[in-house]
Image 1 (cartoon, rainbow, N blue to C red):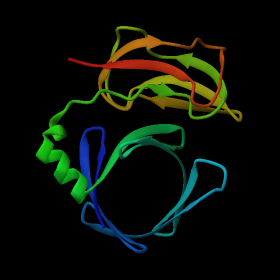
Image 2 (image 1 turned 135 degrees about the vertical axis):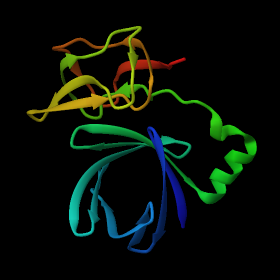
Image 3 (image 1 turned 120 degrees about the horizontal axis):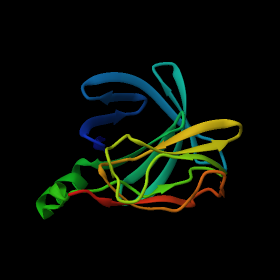
Length: 168
């Protein structure tokens, strides 16, 4: 099955045939398994293991967290992409996803403020969880609409931390 994966700033073609995965023209051996009761997936890519937190956002959109960095991506198969192009939706500008806590923790630092323009990948909030600091990053260019937390505040998984609007 062929897919187009959109990450901030680029699109990547991916083809999956059993355990063989071709990413942007390069073949890899890959397996993916879940950890029951958690959003964690174990990816073995060319014999290199990786733990990823994977959260479905609906309509082919996903949030991936790897080593504390969050990335929003969209995965469309060939048919869905073709239908979107026919409908003219492929050119719709998207801003960053609202930044939510990927796990319970303590806010260590907030690096953005309302009205501030931000670029994709910019650090927004540092969250301490399980004695590790995790920098949560903006998934797309936009403007900070509101900051919902302060340093020292405890947050729950899924709690809204920062909300954005699409930049102009």
